[in-house]
Image (tube, rainbow, N blue to C red; front, side):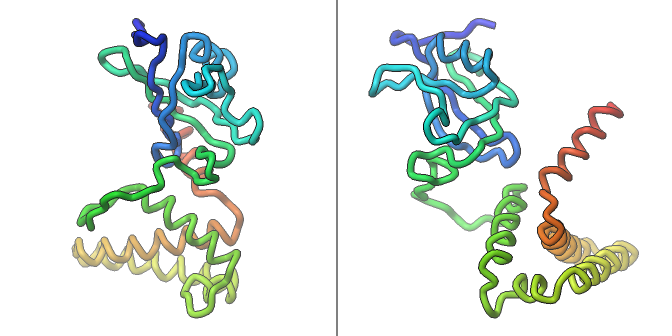
Length: 205
C-alpha cells in the first residue's frame, strides 16, 4: 500500500458514516495523525489553520470509531468509514455538508430514506405533534402498532399472490414504515437489526 502525501505532507480524508453512508466531513491527515488513527481506532487529523494534530472529539466528546479505511486508486486520498458519537460538524450538525445548493426531485429510491424516516419517527414520538399519523400510532400504543404491522404484512402477501408489482411496491413501503414505528416503540434501533443481518451474512458466506 503506497500512500501519497502531498507536498505539505497531507492527504485528504473523506469521513463517512458507516451505517448511513452519509458524508460527514472532509479533513486532512499527515503521517502522524494517520498512524494515530490506525493505532487508536478513532479519527485523528491535522489542522491546516492551527498547524497541529487534533483528535476528533477530544473536547466535545463527539469521537468517531473507525470501521474501515480505504485508499483510492492513485493513493492520494482516503475514505474513512466511522460510527460517530455525536455530531461531526462544529456547528452541531450531523454532517458538515448540511447547506443544500441544489437538490432535484428524483424518481429513484435510496436506502438513505430509512435513516430519514427513522429520525422523523423519533422526533414524532418526542414531540407528539397533533394531526400526524405517527403521533396517532404512538398515542394508541403497541396494540394498534402491532395490528397495523400484521395488516400490512398480510397485504404484502395478497399483492404478491396477485402478481401486481405496483401493488407490492406500495404495500411493502407501508410495511417498512410501520415496522420502523414498531422498532421505535420498542426502543430497538434499526441498525441493530441490520447488524444481525450482517452477522448472519458473514457466518453463512
